[in-house]
Image 1 (cartoon, one colour):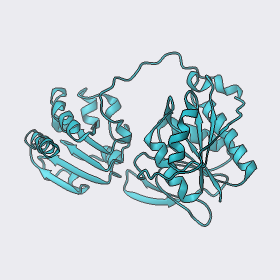
Image 2 (cartoon, one colour):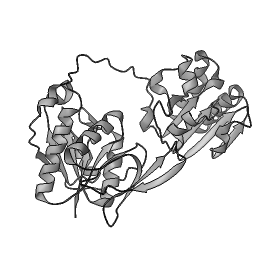
Image 3 (cartoon, one colour):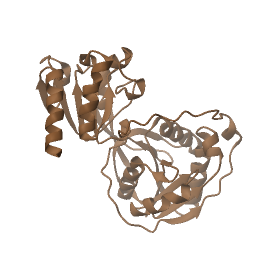
Image 4 (cartoon, helix red, strand yellow):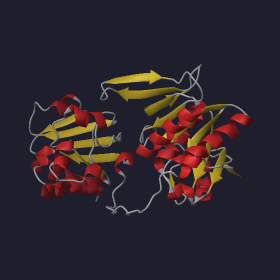
Length: 324
């Protein structure tokens, strides 16, 4: 069976959920071979083996932390060469983050291969892996495959349920020679992100977002209260972000982050196409808006016509009472 390279997104050896989703998808089209880079790479092996990685290629070097993107591309190219020399390679899968998409694009260019970004599903095909994408502001769903070279595919978080499947997870050291371009862009400083105790927006299973109808930064407290009761991440529409009510890092939409949670709750958001493009692939969508004609209601699974300042606190209390 052909092997599938999976780029491992981890923090000091702690594997992030999108990588486990990639391993689940990789098993549909071949045998997953994980590529873990940087500090703590070897510590990822146990979690990767539990989720189907037959091999874990590791390489630790300061370059992965000190420089941007290119050292990781060098390592993935080396992994492609190793796997291709040993047998057949079905695809390279990368989490669909901003960095992941840059890595995928650079790698595809080096390999002379096609690239597919923001896939939401993956299946085996007679002529190679077939990726499902949500395109044109999520107005259409397409299926496509790479027709030249080794497919390089980025997959959006929350596109697949994580399914454990024990495998060997044999750890092998990967030999990497960094290119001259690897040290071209140096990281000069880092500022730790303030922890809110909430899940990462793009990886969260539940997202609660507020928009123009929240009517002020101080009122986002009720959005946060509902999110905390559900163990959810907090999002915001572009209107709320542009007004300075919530940080840009929490913007959901075409010019913000794309999310695909199991549950998306939109409060005081009209549903402009810019916002819909970033959340329309959510599995279940609930909207709360006092305007019964708001475009968001054309999209939702459940809609509540009412003032969010009345509805959201009641919903929060109901969630708390049921959990209690």
